[in-house]
Amino acid sequence: MHVYDYYSLEPGNQKLRPIQETPIDRLIFAGDYTKQPYFAAMDEQLIRYESSRTYIVVLRQMLG
Image 1 (spheres, helix red, strand yellow):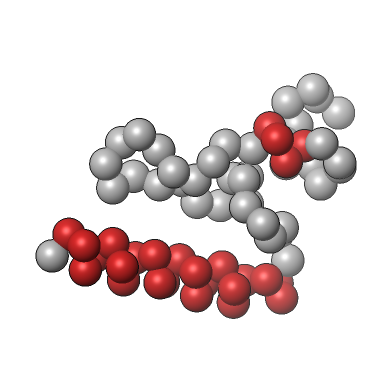
Image 2 (cartoon, helix red, strand yellow):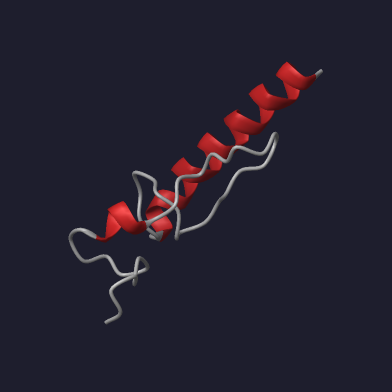
């Protein structure tokens, strides 16, 4: 395993994942490789979908 193998679910690898927010306006990272509270599992996809959907709706309202 490589020292920067942040795809692995081994303890300690969460700190290697990039956060989803970026300094670029209206650009966010998404995907299993980003730092988030849930791992890639089918039962968590609905939670991610709802969270992403809410974020997009709020962002669209803010931007008008």
